[in-house]
Image (cartoon, helix red, strand yellow):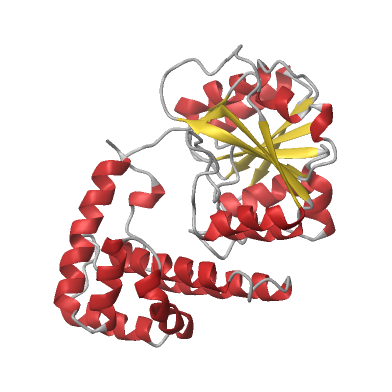
Length: 344
């Protein structure tokens, strides 16, 4: 049995396509859990119609609490051996579930697949590519890639920080009480995957695109979030706490601080010096001073010369030297560059 958890919030224009992509799966032993997170459009009606037609579909309504709470509610209600997460504006390939259900994967805890972003047909009759397995010490390579993403293969398109296009064992989630953090509005997926993979005994990567995702100009990643600094500081503390609790911090210290520098620059670009930030230049510099007091950021900056790409090194250097005018200029240029490339 495979549980497909779909958080739903105001996606009426995509919802039919999303649910139908699961219903036409070549593998039929699944359940769909539609977690309506307080939608105010026609999404609840659409969910009710599907639940009335197919006994494998369950609708769970809750007040708006965010995607993490919705996914957690789905985990609690699920009954499958495997769990997958599907965003309600995305869709999956016809063979995704059948690939998960293969006998060869029964003794593994974690399966990873590829994403695709185009209008081409996702149904593929091509032979299954060679599966790469990870057990024992090799699992550390996957954990490192959550903190410092690098492709597993030359042509692979997996994403190490999302819960989509992958399958999780429900038994592992429940044994270690692994859930998404509702207190975080960005980075909760990274933390979830990190904690899960630290407890997973074995994994496999199947280089097959099974998940079609949508990018929208009104995506949450484009919005200005005034509490981003607090969110990302808490995210860093939680990541370190998980690594320490699993006795892996010393082993992954360099990767952790490399991620901390990414975290720092993200806050500078998307929050402090975002073109959408209405604060005065004096207020922005005050917040830079606040960031410099963060112990993790201070320690991470010691790794700046040996970690990350050149543009990030330059931005962190100017920030560290308190050259805030240059920090502002580079952050602003990075904001527009990243936005243009994300949606090009």
